[in-house]
Length: 196
Image (tube, rainbow, N blue to C red):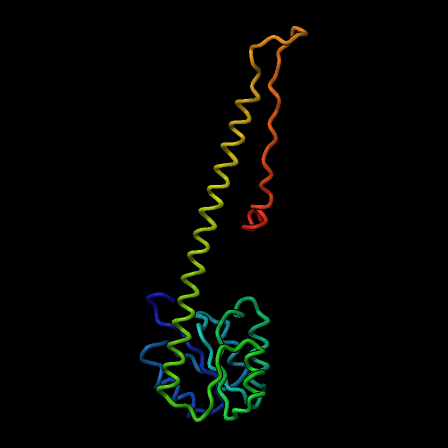
């Protein structure tokens, strides 16, 4: 998403709401729209996948809660942020939305500046988390490389130490030095999920 326009999927059975979302967000973001749950699910899985979904709670074919459950059950789009849109601000509905994995809840009628700021804030949070995740992955790769090099050096050292010495033992044969135990690094492999 860094440097590119974010993709926002707006899902609402009201053409007026979809037009409002497009007018409010369309200059800064790529906006996809869906007027029903079936279209919303199809667009959620199509490239470019949405970075954020604005999801109406009440639709004729399926509730926004059902759509959210379906999205969160799929590894491909489970991490996409969902903001519910609703004409009802009942605290139980709001809590239900958060329990299903939503990151925010906006009440209708939608205030365009509030919508724009909420979307911007959540996209910035997504960017920060993505940046942190990329940095963690880089650190894990560097650590894996260090561990691999350390193990290789340890094995080379063991091979040199295991080479027969030219000393004659009491029985007249070649005497080998005692073998050093190799350090158990399996806990590192498990910790950093190395090798599967």
